[in-house]
Amino acid sequence: MDKFNRIIEFAIRNDAELYTSMPPGWRRVMGATTAPRGSMWICNGKSYFSRERKTALLVKEEYLG
Image (cartoon, rainbow, N blue to C red; front, side):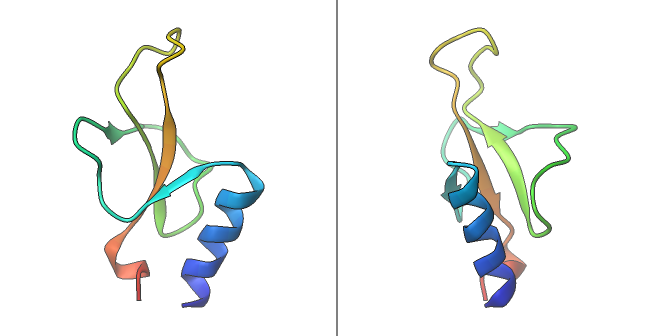
């Protein structure tokens, strides 16, 4: 559970939403390297220039416990 707690702390420090399963229509942000081990950055697929774009962290299953 310690690994999962580190991901939670990172999300809190960086004001990022945290998901345990991929929301419909979202996809992985390829090339993003700042996510903590055991997670990955995902986005809702909107344009970088759109105010509708949202990003979040997705926790990999093996880090859930």
